[in-house]
Image 1 (cartoon, helix red, strand yellow):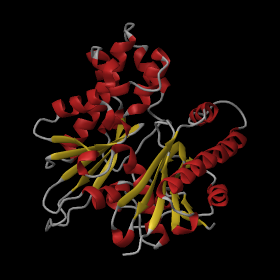
Image 2 (cartoon, helix red, strand yellow):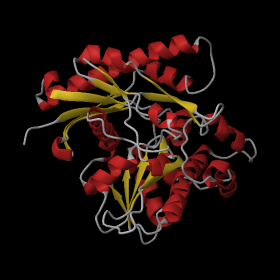
Image 3 (cartoon, one colour):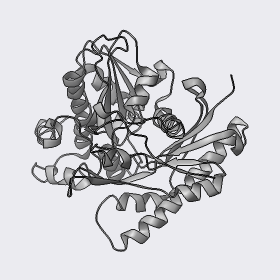
Image 4 (cartoon, one colour):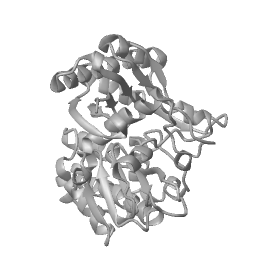
Length: 376
């Protein structure tokens, strides 16, 4: 069987850099041939983070230049992938390039709202000599959907089981849950999915602020702190957690100022105890989502950078007795490769003019072909 190679590139809300995969998707299979990652240059990361909030001047100019910078990091990852796999650009069908989300406000303001992923896919096509598929989310918004999450369809293809309900939790900057009913289920129950709340975004922010480290490796700092019940309750009182799906969120809501407002209503707390509380917020909000939306699931497959946080994984297991909490490694794909592979898979669907969204997840009026193609 001839290979059908696609590249997927993902830079998520954790803002730690770019993950890329080269995947063979022939006949609908999913086989990763190579994985590469590149951190953001410090100045680009700072600018992307700043552009998440309405601050500073000349945002359009800065956003355009940040998109150029992102495309250059993407191109670096593509070159590394091709070298590792000993492939030429002409052997790759297309690149699926997600872009960097800096604003996500679906359904707001005028009934449609917007979602904004900075990118320069034309520059990426020019730098790599490969067709690029980008701007995946806006077509779903135009059809009345949230534009997110888009990974549940891929999760179903990769992790679904014919006779068992499986829940998949992606722990990036934001946490999102996919609920995959048995494929053989007679009632045709649909795949579900939604954003649960914050994952690494707030924990990383707090660790960077108080320890000058990019993240809490393994969750060891949080594990040594004490959860503050009052702060946890205040954070969990955020109305987003009680909203029904379809729903999606991002740094537009769960940002440092949101945390600071809650902390201002508490007596001063030790930074390590705040970190422990933020980890518990992620675990508790995700566990509640599993209990409410995936009560039939006996397995929770965890992917994203948060799957490498041993403390967070232990807390999920403790909060979900009777549910096997597994890293996606145990189901064939390492945690930090899952989302990039999803956008390679979505790019294939775009090239084949096949729908990439699930209306049962996003709330769109129906299935839509996602994205725009930038020929090399």
